[in-house]
Image 1 (tube, rainbow, N blue to C red):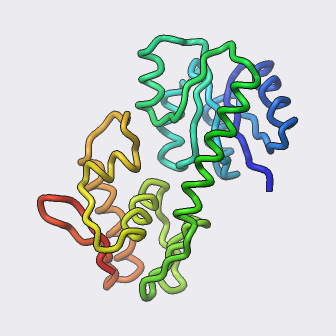
Image 2: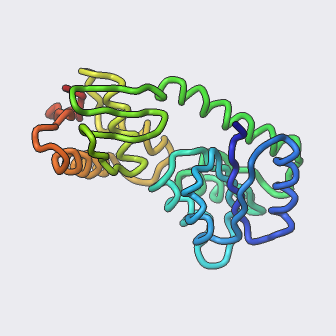
Length: 226
């Protein structure tokens, strides 16, 4: 099945240029010309997002942060802004790469391919179906169920749960979890991990009050205890 690329840029000629190049390589391409339209297309589960920085309304950095709340796929910025500060802002917002306009088609397609190849390697490790009593975690489908009840987790909540479940009994420091899930360049701190774990526990408990697989390791962080 062809991978799906979401292109987000308010310049329609540039979108058409990138779309044609990617479709020639066999990719399925979705096109958005602003932030709201891009967020609506996330339901189509793109495998990679290509995102401009300078757009009217919601700019690329704001949009990237919003996408990161819903999806963990690679995000590649393409922008005419070329300073080091712009690159850093893109990475801190949750981006994985930054390509300066104008760019060559060969480099553009190669970067898309490289990010998708890395995603396939990562998925090979996480695309596992894990079961702990009544708790089932579908790594490929990114779903969590307690018996017949689906537990609705955000993208980052799911990533935290899966990380811990794949390494039972291993204690993870909050800082380590933050770096693995948010990235080394993320603009925040490990306190957000605590808040996400609280939400995960609350959602699991709402489905089954006896389900509490995430243990607190005092002075360290968390581990999977199921």
